[in-house]
Length: 140
Ligand SMILES: CC(C)(COP(=O)(O)OP(=O)(O)OC[C@H]1O[C@@H](n2cnc3c(N)ncnc32)[C@H](O)[C@@H]1OP(=O)(O)O)[C@@H](O)C(=O)NCCC(=O)NCCS
Image 1 (cartoon, protein in one colour):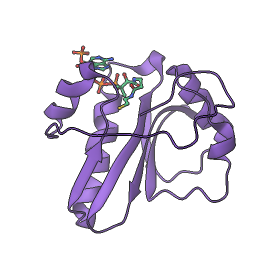
Image 2 (cartoon, rainbow, N blue to C red):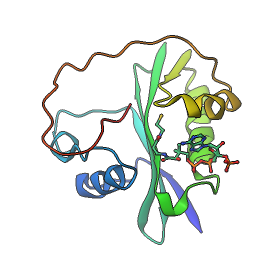
Image 3 (cartoon, rainbow, N blue to C red):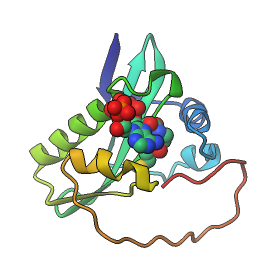
């Protein structure tokens, strides 16, 4: 049975492993950087194993950004991603945050996010630190 826990401490290595499992770069050095400060994160845990994760960057009032939604391939298509998103959106709603954004990452996910209530906008991204210390594609 999968447990959903806000702000459970997660080691950079466990998070990097999950990133790698979904095909992203590990970013382990960044994840261990003490300057890193997110509003909150939500973990999906199955028998003490991290199988799903989503993190929110937020100013707490006007805007929040949902980042790095990921579910381990073993656990995909079982509703874990949707549960992570719904719990995250419920928390942001209860905090009274005005606007929440997410980058779809791939066009195929547009319907997924629209079913969760998002409407689609144009967006731009600029990579300010192009060097990569680990292999893999960048997460949205
Ligand atoms: C996207 C992701 C988080 C969805 O998590 P999940 O737990 O598998 O999703 P759910 O079980 O809640 O929902 C499954 C539905 O998601 C949609 N979906 C998931 N991945 C999809 C993809 N790559 N393309 C199109 N639709 C997708 C489908 O509609 C699917 O429904 P189906 O089972 O009827 O086909 C997961 O596939 C993942 O971690 N992907 C790799 C990382 C990633 O791309 N994250 C999103 C960054 S914006």
